[in-house]
Length: 51
Image 1 (cartoon, rainbow, N blue to C red):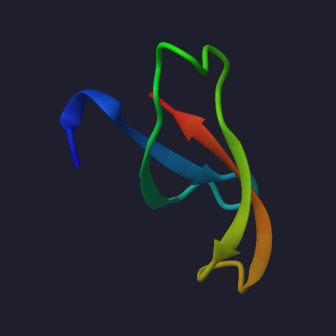
Image 2: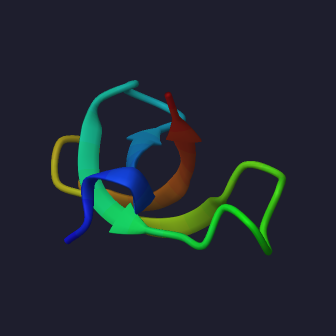
């Protein structure tokens, strides 16, 4: 993965960084929000993009 397009996804409940992903920052300006599985909460929660 290219470092310039790399983003971190943080769980909205426990605030742990569980996933790393890519996004095209030229076409998607706002922060990404995905519903993903958190192994610490043991549930599907909303994961938000962090800095």
